[in-house]
Amino acid sequence: MDPPEKPQKRQESIELPVAPDGGYSWFILVSCFFVFGLTFGVVKSFGVFYVEIHQYFETTAAGTSWITSITVATIHIAAPIASALSARFSHRSVVFMGGLICSAAVGLGSLARNLTELYITVGFLNGFGYALTWTPTVTMLGMYFEKKRPMANAFASAGECILTFSLTPLFQLLIDSFSWRGALLILGGLQLHLCVCGMLLKPLRTLRHAHKVREEERSPLKKGLDETKLSFRVESELNIMEMSDQETINVEVPDETSSLTKNSTRNPKSCKLRTGIQNYVDYTLITNGRFMVYSMFGVFAALGFFAPSLFLVPYARSKGIKEYQAAALMSISAVLDLFGRVFFGWVANLRLIKTVQQLTVTVILLGTVLLLCPLASTFSQLVAFSAAHGLVYGATVAIHITVLPEIVGVEKLGSALGFFMLIRSSGGLLGPPIAGFFIDKMDNYGTGFLMSGVALIVSALFLLILHQMSRRDQGTVTATNNAQK
Image (tube, rainbow, N blue to C red; front, side, top):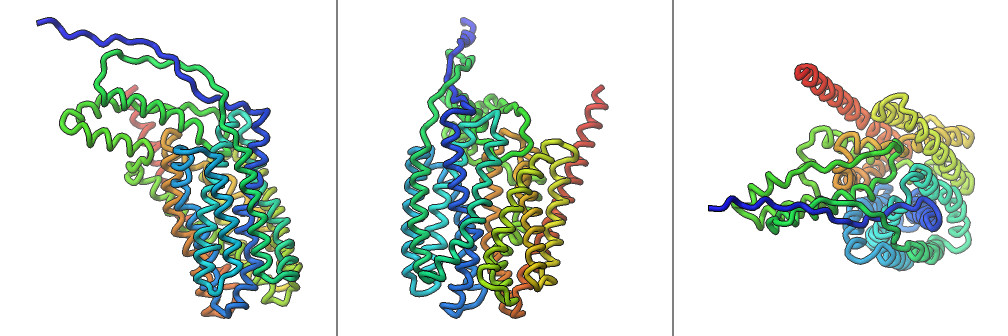
């Protein structure tokens, strides 16, 4: 019997997109800037509408806060759907459609006859449109920038702060002139600019050549696995976004082909299906203890992240602060938020301490600031609180995503980010209504800030647990290496 032929290897040339880091990239940056502003900037400015809707429908604080909660939760939950639609169609078409949905949803919300209709329109449909616009645009920003990605992400996220600064007093002016219904209708027209942002998303065509060694004779399953691994490697490189520790990262995908091929002899179809699913959603992350601990941090942090922005204006109004002065508090917070993101993102790049340690400090400071809020009763005191809250909030937001690749590795960052946002959505959904429940029971908006502060302090405990787990794992690896020597 002749010995089996060894499979011959040959080298293939493949083409990978390369980030231009200039030229048309700046138009992508402008698009992302306004998408940040017209999505999360509007969410943070919605506290001005909260007061009017609360008074108009004569409902509870918890009932009114569900509008923002549903919006935030839908953005998180629908993000994977937006990514899948972008891969199936195009980033441009998905963002354009998202802009139309946002505009129509807010326009219909201006005709709402009860809170339930606002939940459906301004809450769910608008949040779904935000997911369709924000997720593909940020992905495109990561594709167009590589060397200048830190600067690009900083300027893009600044859109949230700058438009919050501008929109809050504008919304108050529109409400005074046209009522909250007229202001929502104008906001719906304003959100049509999201379609313009989508039209700027030109597909990236600049390519670079890479080489891949292939075997001539392979089973169909093994061939599919190699192609899957290659596409996953490319996608992992392109989807690394919003990371402040902007050092060069090498993506290494472990070779699992041999083990999967062995298992495929028994059930090749199920093995191939499992491999395909894991390429898009790495469900093995639920067995990663450090990732699950960090996800619990995300849940409790989200409980305290969104409620303060929603209740700051109503709290100021309850203390006798005039309407435009109350709206100005959000603008002050937005300015310090911008500074906090840029400055503390730069500090994180210096690597003076570990990122998780810096995040722990900022989260504890943020919780402490919120716990002190009920002590503020005059306009000057509320200005000091708004400035402190904006600064520490920006410092926290600037680095909390960058911990993920340190936990799971860059090769699993895409799936980890999706899972993290999905788990965190429960905190974003429940945070404002829980705060509203305490406000209704105590008849004091200050209790909402107390709840948020306590939630953030609790979330910091999970970061301390994560830090201890990381030290233990690092000690185990060091001991193993020493033993091998």
